Length: 302
Image: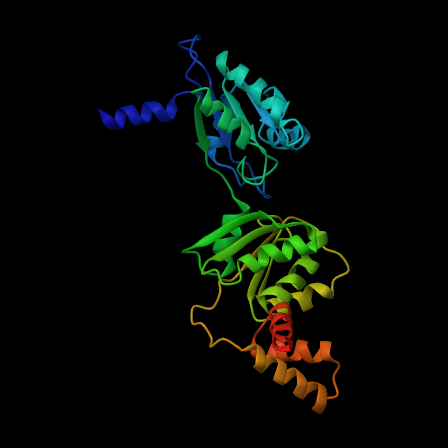
C-alpha cells in the first residue's frame, strides 16, 4: 500500500489545488541549467509545465529554456531590484490557489540569486514551499576541483573592492575547509593576486569557468602559478567559481618577526635589493603572504 501511495504521489500534478480550489497554492523552487540546457531534471520540467505561473530572474533568459522544451506558461519578472514588492505579489497568487515556480537564470534560486525573501515570506504565511533540486555551479566545481569535499564553505561573491576582498581572504587564512566563491571574470586576476598576497603563493586554488558549457575550463594549482597563466590572457569571459584549498593540516613552526627582519636585512645587504623586493623574497622563503611578512617586519621595527 505504501509503494502504491508513493507512485500516485509521483504521478500527481505539480499542484494539488485542482480538487480543492479553496486551498492555497504551492511555491516551487526549481533548479535550472547552469550552462548546458540538459542540466535539468525530469521533475523540474514537469513542474514548470504544470504550475500556473513562473517567476523569473530574467524573463528573456527563462524564455529560452521554456521554448527549448515547448513549455507555454505565463511568466513574471522577479529579480533583486523588485524582489521586495514582487514577493508580496507572488504570495497573493499563492493564497488565491495558484501554484508558482521560482527560477533564477541558472542553478537553484536563492543561492546568490533572488528567492530568499520570497521563501521567508511564504513560510511566514504558512504556505507550502517545495524544492525541486537541480544543477549547482558551486557543487559541480567542487566535486571536479580535486580539493577536499568533506568540509567546505560557500561565501557567495567576493567583494569588488580590494580592501574588503582582502579582509574576507584574511578571515579564511587558517580555515580547515575548502573555500568557494563566485567571482566576476573582469576581477579574477586581481582577486587571485590578493590570494597570493594574503594567503601566500603556495596556496592551492582552482578556477572553474563556464562549468557544463561548451568552453568549460578548470585551472588547478598553486595560486602563484594560476595567476601567471591568467596574466597572459588578454580577456576573460564567462561565469567563474573560485575554490581555495584549506590551510595546511600540518602547521609549520611560526616564523618570528625578528627572523623576517633579519632575512630582509640580509637580502638588502648581500643581494643589493630594495626593502620592498627583499620583503617579497623573504615572504616567499618563509612561506608567508606579503601582507603577513610586512606586519612581522613592522613589529620587529617597534
